[in-house]
Amino acid sequence: MLIDSHAHLDDEAFNEDREELMGKFKEAGIEYIVNIAAGLSSIKSSIALAEKYDFIYTSVGVHPCETKELNEESFLWMKEQLSGPKVKAIGEIGLDYYWNEPKKEVQHRWFRRQLQLAHEVNLPIIIHSRDAAADTYGMMKEEGADRLLGVIHCYSYTKETARDYLNWNYYFGIGGVSTFQNAKKLKEAIEYIPIEQIVLETDSPYLAPAPFRGKRNSPLNLPFIAQAVAKIKGMDVQEVIRITGENSKKLYKLA
Image (cartoon, rainbow, N blue to C red; front, side, top):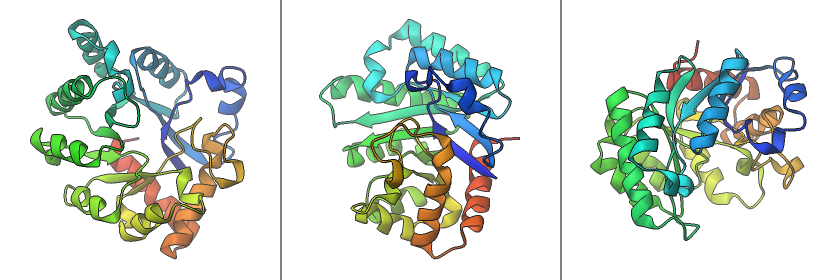
């Protein structure tokens, strides 16, 4: 059975057909979906989604591009949401230097606070890092993230950077980019990373795999990602599905 370790099904891109789509997942062989929060409003909608559907779990966290909305009051509210039975991680959190806003100082402050929170509540972390490899790793090291369980979501760096996180026994989220012809660096990293440290993700509605590139992504496209990983690693696709599914269950402590 497939597990989508990172999706955003509460996104407005699914507003018109969300319920219809939800009815297709089990038939398509999808066992669980971890719906990832990205901001304060999506924490609410993601928790509501997880409460409605038994096969969906969720996280609580604020994406680096949304950290400008955080203050002490909203951070306390966010912390209170962690008590829900379907909440399995803190994320997605991290650094994003692709955009100019919010300023790096703001991103740094709330990245550190959310890492500290993960220590406090002993939950795994979901890391978003874009054009910020050195600072992400450096700040995580300073905050003792080597003692946390975690996943580098939508991994996009080199196999050398992967080595640093492998030393911490982190997982690597592999999604639709693995199917792109020009994703040479990522494919080299996938080849290098042990299959025992890989989890499959779609990041729906973003980053649809090659056959649907540029269109809305959904967990129904997970087989294309599994096939890409299997081809890169010279493995049977069913074995990739089995092992990556077990990895997701270990990472998020899924039933």
